[in-house]
Image 1 (tube, rainbow, N blue to C red):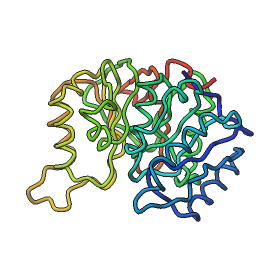
Image 2 (cartoon, rainbow, N blue to C red):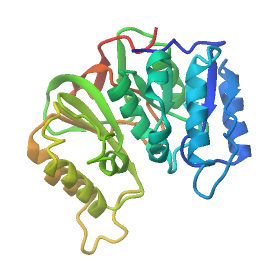
Image 3 (cartoon, rainbow, N blue to C red):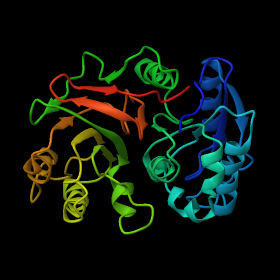
Image 4 (cartoon, rainbow, N blue to C red):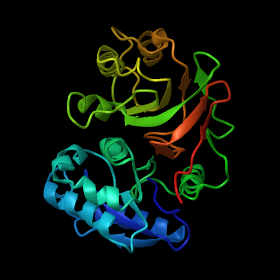
Length: 305
């Protein structure tokens, strides 16, 4: 299932399924989206705050469902990540989402929603910038608009020319794009909401985790067989993930080589998506072709209509 193209005049519904943001940051992001030609409809609880949560779980879930039910809303974008998206899963009526397919956009803590909406409902979702992201970054804004408007066609996603990628082997593989934040992928293992990686291209990114923690999460995915089920792997931005001290630590690259290169799947490294800029938008659940030598991701089917 796919939602409508998000073009000038489309209405974006604003929701806060996870952590809170200041009213100033929310308004700044909304003004940026309006400047890009979007109309805005605010969720009732986007300014709520309950410690590290953007209000009560039931209220955050209801805002999200209300946006899917609202015929005036063409697409839905989250305020920010942080923490809390997992907590609203029991309160979501997935029949409503399945009957009202719309572009749904977010990243970081929103990873669990992106992947489960696709797994449960067949909805193509978007790992991309949120309301509190830096929309003044030209590559970020242009990459977002290219994907949600599906222009040009075929849709090729790649880094700006000045930012190289790396790979462990030259290969082309096809599969369904899944993934997002490594911590969220790891933390939903063993639950009904865990990621399905069979025959997939698995994308992973992270922020603020030292190499030992990334090693632990990748090892969990190895022990569960999730990595071995993939057809290919994409490593996005691993922001602020270097060891605090080189003493008694492997480097981040050593962790990747030990945990990932060893399974001998085609792997693309340093795709610009995650917790830094530029921030490329990726259609989660879509069929894609990964070319590790060229450093490109070709989307093989429509992701909006």
